[in-house]
Image 1: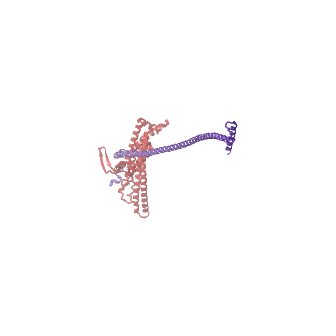
Image 2: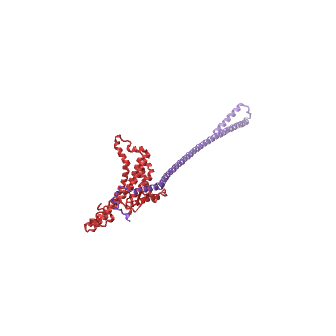
Image 3: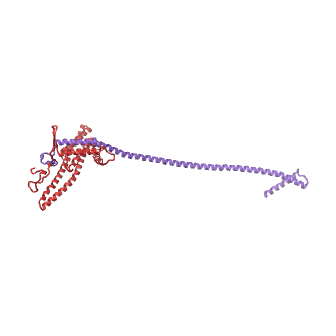
Amino acid sequence: MANFISLSEVTCKFGDLECPFPAPGAGIFEWKPLASFNLFGFTSIEVTKPVILAMLCTVIVSVVFIAAFAKPKLVPTGLQNVVEVGYLFVRDNIAREIMGKDGDRFVPLLTSLFFFVWSMNVMAIIPGAQFPVSSRFAFPVVLALIVWVVYMYLGMKNQGVVGYFKNIAFPPGMPIGIYPLLTPIELLSTLIIRPVTLAIRLFANMFAGHLLITVFTVSAWYLLNLTNFVGFVSVIGYLGSVVSFIVTIVLTGFEMFIQALQAFIFTLLTAVFISSSLHAEH
Amino acid sequence: MNWILAAEGAESGSNVLLPPTYELIIGTIAFFVIFFALSKFALPNIKKTLEARTESIEGGIAKAEKLQQEASITLAQYRQQLSDARSEAAKIRTAAESERTNLISEARNEAQVVAQTVTQQANAQIEAEKSKAVNELRLDVSKLAIDLASKIVGASLQDDARAKAVIDQFIKDLESAGGKR
């Protein structure tokens, strides 16, 4: 941490002992609050960039969906056409794929999850925003908690409180000898590991992706310092900078894919958890 | 615009795995706002529309199927009626044919009977006329012959049996001579 300096403070030239490579760290995920409110003396609301982006995502997803489906036509056009594809994707490829016709009840939940997560992920590559909201651990945690509450509630409602925990701890159709081994694993898996991995998977993917893009962006800028030298070193500087820049672009494209994929996986796993709560069998 | 850039170093001691309370609150509110907006305003509309679309497509198919069924039923009916009419016409034609044959043969029979009767009557009449004429002729001839003979022999042969036989012989000769002619 001794050599750590802020990106905005780098003014030095390469080669100075005072000017090491300002490797982006966990600090790039910390934001100064724009404003701060006190919430009934309970806690303070810090209006940071991730918070603003999260609210922006909320508004965009809500408004786009309401606008697209305000007056839906039998033959879809324009915005309705596009949003319908997204809606049908969640309905057919997630809800119905996992739960069949039963899944139709959960389409609003799954659609909300998918598009909220996706919009927060996509913020990573929107010029000006360029920060994945879901790389702030709080957002995946909140969503995973909501999913946890939903599938626990559904499990207890459909299989009974005792029945649900019995089915988790003692999955039917297993030889009795395996239960000492299986029961702790199943309890741990369903009650704790499921929501934790759900949150961490999304968070870590977005965190790593943003870190990677930042490293190569900084590298493309930092290597230009080498061009202050003459001869071979300056060639390396240009080459390294250009390569870093290209890698940044390629990674951005790759991130686009990862963003959609992670939103899909998050929603798909939610559907799987809900499905396992509806039916006892494994 | 400083808030756009990450506040590095500002809170560099904080742990990224320890979410601040305000972000948990904002995240929860954000999700429920989206969930409320989608499940109350957006998705019921599109669900209804999609159902209506499916219905209209399936309804259209069902309607077309129904129309086709009706058309094929009507076609079968028309075909049935056509073949009925054809067989009826054939029946009528056959009946007419047989009736015609009957009529012709009946007429022929009748004509034959009538002709036969007419011929028989004519024959009978001719026969009667003929025998009458022969009798008359016979009387006349015998009278004439007697008169003639009387004139020749100068005696009456009227009551003589022999004269009668001669006369008969004479007439017979006349007849056979007439038949030869």
